[in-house]
Length: 168
Image 1 (tube, rainbow, N blue to C red):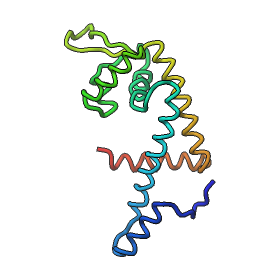
Image 2: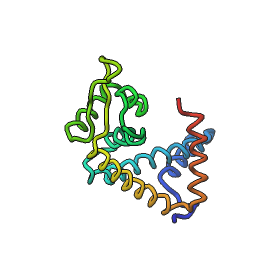
Image 3: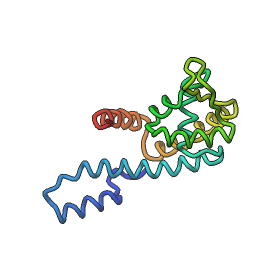
Image 4: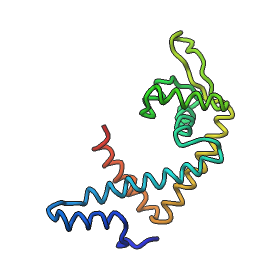
């Protein structure tokens, strides 16, 4: 574990601001700078964890959303778009690729001729189950390298609180 007082790149940035603008309170910059850097670093790790399963993070998100929905693992494209905060165009591209790979299928909605239903295939379920296990292992490793369980739980609570006040 890295000592709590270790200096990082964000400290260097806030120190530079302190020199040129000593009137600024840079604590928010320190917090969010680290959040952004952490998200970027973990995103790259997650990409590597999902690669052996043949999916990107974005594709994993689609498969995981279907898997979490429970049997029959079916949602509308609109439900997927809303959950993943994607445009319909962005969703269509992901669905096209995942359907070509045999990880999901699209079919007409039996209750609305104009609508589609997206269903996770058996192969898609195998892929997402393996990928989520691999991704959680990467995330657990990162947490355990820096925090004990109590600290990780406290961080989760604090981030939930912060996100709750900033998410639109």
